[in-house]
Image (cartoon, rainbow, N blue to C red):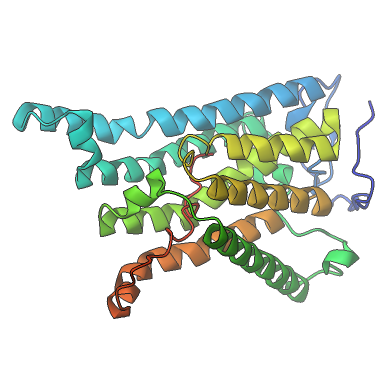
Length: 326
């Protein structure tokens, strides 16, 4: 069985197994075999055989979207019932202007992300038989000179963090420039964070604490390697990027610039995953990108107090901050 490799990417470095390597039985294997402690994330045991891996990854994507649609209802429905029985104000128009209702929608994403991560854990570990983070490649590349990763140890890790932080900051700057040059209407996210400071803080929390990890696990951790085994690197980069952007179209449909920025971010993260053959660099870039915006979200109400009113208000600042829809 052959696997497609991107034409310019380096071959993965196979590390020597430890003295007591774990025994992993990939799905579809004829008999159990010993596997190195550091697995090849482009050929993970959970994705064997390839058709099964692609099916599991697609189901994982569907499950992540379903969780974001259904799990928040656990918090929202009781409040809707309360409003309907006490004030008879459960109409859609009333609820969209209700600060508590909007805050609960944001807060409900936290358990949705937890459930999504739990499903991914069961799929990747094949019932806790495989190491979760090692199977996803949640580490720095062992050798990739052109990306600045050489050798091992804390200094190499620090170089990786610095490089990925710079990439994340550059992406943020490009996104800010695009949304300033091509301003659009306010998105649903703009209206959400402007509804209350509690919603603003909850959005910033999700953007930093849960969204980067969950999204990277689903898209770059599972969807990319599963499709890469069948289609190769470049088609997989395109598919993952389009799927990531597609789930945001409804939320940002009235602002094409924001959708374009989201697509740019997804393409960059997926290419980094393909180039490094590891998930941790993409996660760090994602974390820095969201982190900068989260800080702005939290501080924005205080900063605007010191600004003079302008007859030409600036467009909403990067409405793509929270990418919590996986």
